[in-house]
Image (tube, rainbow, N blue to C red; front, top):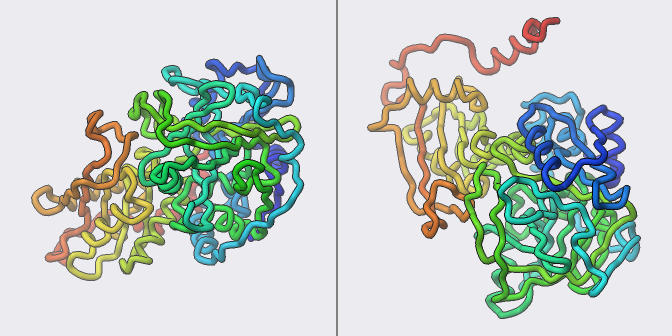
Length: 477
């Protein structure tokens, strides 16, 4: 596949032509941007919104939200037909991922990101529109739809993750990363050596690279190279003058600096993807920004977390579900017919796997691997395993299987001391770090599979065919 857009601006022009973009002027950063973001997040297939003429900022300093929050725009970002269906999107995405051959970056010496370069005393983070996204947030967050670029001090591995960035003052920003994330591994290595951690934060970048930064790209693989392979051409990068880190040459805004060991400031609270201020306020490392790079009339990309679902859940529900199925198959679980990381659980807390049972223990095997593979391990909660006649994406169907095929005395497993983190709202403050997992075997009991009462109704595939043929009745035309 090859994407047809070159950068975020090109993407915006094409999305606008699709009728998927709304332009809003004179919307304040203090409250209204956050209110609009929450409304869009909780409206199916809502458009993207580009704010301009923002009070307190020069005309042309813009902010984009809900970019990939609808299937049509997600498909366009991935280079797929915009009218693609759910199953076809997941299948095509898996085909693309399976064909990935990491594509190294192309280093260049010029690019739009160098249109404005501000260093040292010239740096002022308040220069860019940074909303207060939620009413109880402890500050203004410039980094929500950001690319946080770090490098492993022991190798050439460059990682790009999305970790929240709060403005402390003109030259310092909070640098929160949950334990176990790849960027945290890098940062902890530097700090263990009592060395500063170099970092670049891109707060307006390529939509596909942003998606990659929020997915489970394998350890040691750079998101630059992973996404470059997906889009069919390498990312062009410029070396930061202070850190030497690769900065996208066509990015909108990039902040370059260092986080220092044993230096923290109070960060948060911040409304997170679980729907709570679960991490509260805490001392977190700080980035001292040495340089700011930005294009003329820069565009900040916002992706503020909301109570599920929000924008990231609306695209991750397809992509993480596909990656979960792939992880199960790669682990040797046979006859996986479906997987779904439910939006209600933030695409992490509630995952469902559908299998065609082949042997005793097959359902338990699928459930335990789904709970601990890379896609399912971080901040998971519940895994439900169902038979092949259940649509894993349909919660009514899934809960019917739980209610009619599982029995508490034989169907439940609990894993203790699993990978959690500060964002887990169900863990008491002071005890955060571990959580437990519930695995529900909602398959027909293997021991008397053939004796189980036959179910009423068609298979998931038959139901999909019915909706394809007769769904117009529901739409009234």
